[in-house]
Amino acid sequence: MKPEPIPSRAAINGHPLHPMLIHFPVAMLVALVGSDAAYVYTGDFFWARASLWLAGVGALGGWISGVAGIIDLATVPHIRRLITAWCHSILAVMLLSLASFNWLLRVGDPVEYLIPWGVYMSLLTAALISVTGYLGGQLVYEHAVGVDIEEAYAKTRHL
Image 1 (cartoon, rainbow, N blue to C red):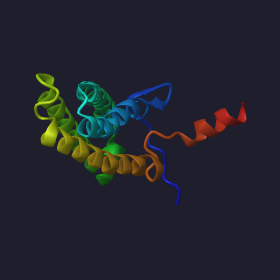
Image 2 (cartoon, helix red, strand yellow):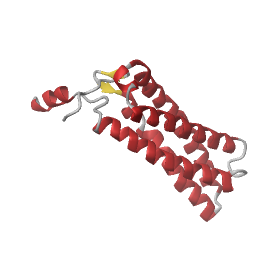
Image 3 (cartoon, rainbow, N blue to C red):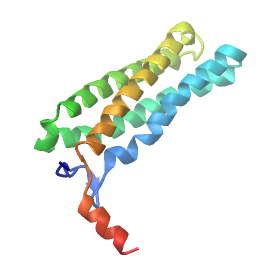
Image 4 (cartoon, one colour):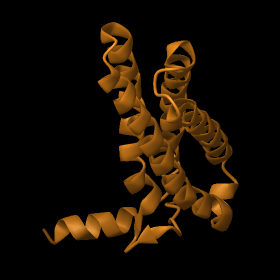
C-alpha cells in the first residue's frame, strides 16, 4: 500500500526546507574526516585550520537545518506519530552536539586537541550522519514526509 503523503510545514512553495538545507552541513562534516586525516598524514597546519572551519560551518549549518526539521516534528501530527522521526531527531541532536563540541575543541588552537579527540569526534559524527541520514531517507521514501506526489506529477506533465 502506498503511504499517504505528509506535507511539511517548514516549506517554501511546497518544497520542504530541511532536506534542502541539510546537504552542505553533511558535506562539511563528512569532509572533516578527510581534512583531519590529511593533517594526521602531513602535519600541515592548513589542514587543521580547514578542519576548524569545516567543523564550525558544518555544525552551524546543521543546527539551522535542524530548526526546519524540528518545526515539522513539532507542528505536523502525522510526523510526531512516527517512531522513525523521533529516532532521526534524537540522533540528529546527538550528532550536532558532538559536531559543536568538536568545533569548540578546535577554536583556541586547531591542533591542540585534534589528535586523538578531534579525529575521534569527526569519525563518530560521520558514523552518526550515516545512521541519521538513513532514517531521514526512510521518512521520505517509506513514509512520504514532505513529498507531494500529485503536485510533482502535475509539474512534470507540463514540462
